[in-house]
Length: 143
View 1 (spheres, rainbow, N blue to C red):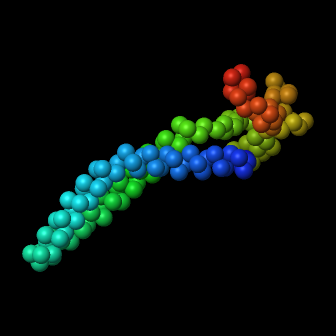
View 2: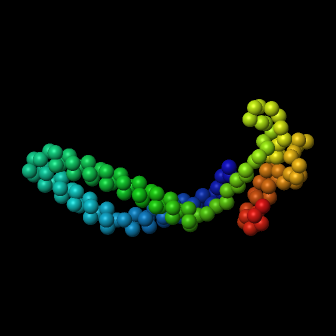
View 3: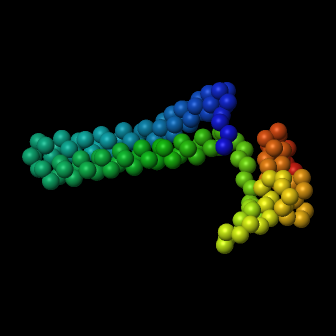
């Protein structure tokens, strides 16, 4: 794991706030319309002293608000992922130094005397160091 630099964190936070504001603005009219409708139902039920109808409308309002908060959160995350891409190093290791039965075996994660054939200079650690130097070039090579 790698922490964001101060500059990256500031950029991430700025884009996060902007994404949430954009998604919220997109749904504001629908949220207001439904909230007004449900509040009117609640008030009408209060005037007629219909507790069942009032409770039903209040439950519906809470459910609607919860669903809209969740929708805004999900959509803003999606938008943030599009606007703030960052590289992540993943490595699929076949030999990690121990077998499923607990016996010692070859290890391709770091330079050591028990490396599998063909991994010299291409251990996980070596590839990670290359990735850290220039993630974009690493991805373009398809290493």
